[in-house]
Length: 83
Image (cartoon, rainbow, N blue to C red):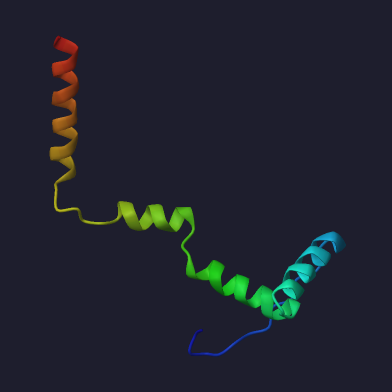
């Protein structure tokens, strides 16, 4: 958890059937709904979204110049066209 502790979060207008399902899942684990949802949110925040993951992967310096990669791909394609 963060150095700042915790903050309350309120979620309104959750469909009753969804709350029932979540309460049942929490009970099955011997947890309160609040504890179950808190753990779920902590787990969700710990994992990057696909956009975050892609951004981190494409922002890396792979040690190879992008121009060289594009030129090499173009040359390979041109060789294939000649055959």
